[in-house]
Length: 163
View (cartoon, rainbow, N blue to C red):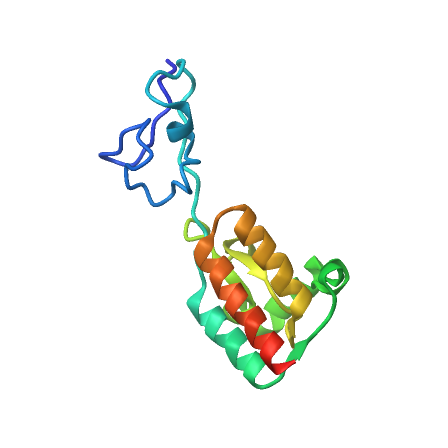
């Protein structure tokens, strides 16, 4: 039986943008958009929140301070981003923990042993790429992951100051 769309978190009410659901990004939670008078639909599940990977942020700051970065152009990321094959080879040699340090976002609902847990890559496993930071900043802003967007803006500012 279909039910009115609602948040599956206990104690949360649909139609109230200020319900305190941490997965509700600027009122874009499905139940918030539908409101209390929404037609009956299949159940809607809350969106997953990607969180800032604090150790990766610290690692990236350290790389920049060591001047291990490339000041490339905005559109270069499609060419400079590691391929799936390169990612798999890196994981085989260094492990998933080292792979995680090259990604500024973590999806806590994904298995820590899987690549899919780690989001927002910013380098090529050797250096920070300006184009990778710009791509991450843009995408974080698009999906309203403000903590990641601010962290990337900080890293970009460091590049501007040192470059």
